Length: 245
Image 1 (spheres, rainbow, N blue to C red):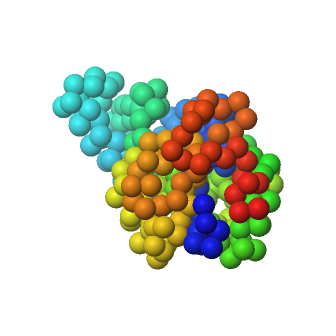
Image 2: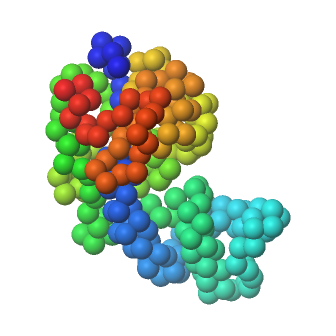
Image 3: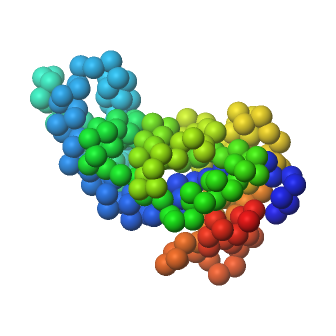
């Protein structure tokens, strides 16, 4: 990893900047508890209707592909709220990287962050690393399957305070799937950097493989208690403290 060449750092969230437990034991259960009431309250809003239409389209696709999602029937608002809620439950149980689901979750979490019900979690080495990298004049970007809104909310409301001032950009699956090399080429273009000048850090080897294919420098993040491989073609880091110290 050449310090001179890398001027931008691209970070995954889950298992990299943020404990997996926070996502699965705090964020996901919160969204599940709130989804029915949220959809009912905002069903006719301009911000939610695109998500509802996208969920319906995904539901049709799932049915056509024989995945057997819950039925989506009825014409009343109550019918639509219940159908969309049950489909959201099903998508979450499948751990589906659905754009519509991620968008809806972000909007639900927004209320939780704003009223104090939610507070983002990051590992203790994240804030010191952010400060150090910015002092080194490296840009810092996030790439997660969660929506850009969800990313901004998490980093704006952490237990270490608002970290968004350290971040230069956010990317979600709108640029493409995280296991596709083309996604990282798009990100490099957006950052206006050669891929070789970007370090991507993630806890998922398939994502790192794709980023390396696109020409990026890569590092596999294996946090304490994580189940990362003993050997990897990617440099293994267990703390951000070793990344450009």
